[in-house]
Length: 92
Image (cartoon, rainbow, N blue to C red):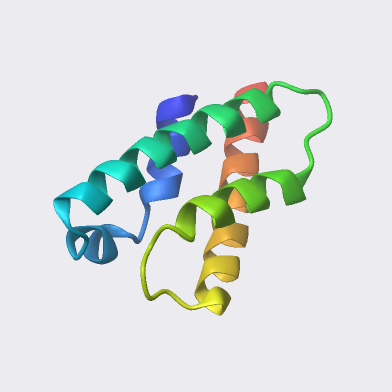
């Protein structure tokens, strides 16, 4: 499940990721793995709050320099919905 979450998180971020310095990439990757682990833990609960997942993803995306807040919120919502869809597929 965590690998699927990580795939969703990294979607559409290739160009931005490549533009980061090596140190920024490493920090972004580590934070992304921690975010995926936290989301995975949230998904194990019976009741999952979408806003908690969105907040985790937004916090992680804020590590990207020069990205506007509208992009962050939109991207976080899209990724959170995809992650919830993954959970629904796994349950069924």
